[in-house]
Length: 84
Image (cartoon, rainbow, N blue to C red; front, side, top):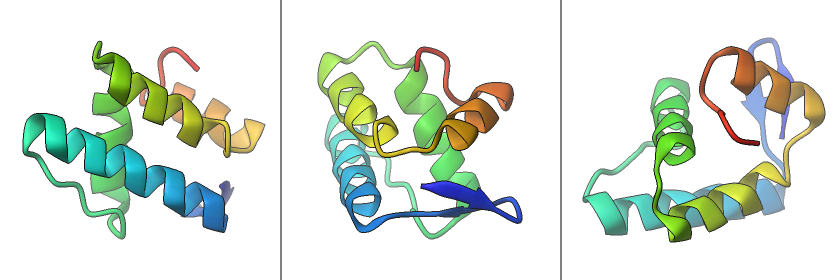
């Protein structure tokens, strides 16, 4: 995933990992996140990053491993990622 004009651009594997994360969060919390909506996507990442659930953390790490350093730094600056 990379950031272009403040929009996220995903690789195919990044989309797959993000869908896995969203499905796990939905399964655990009952909350759905629209991945096509940037605000909803950021809420998903923020929740996941601050969540102590080990399974969600595993999916988050798998997703963040697909990100460019620039995107990780941007998400950290926004306070969305805290551990990665």
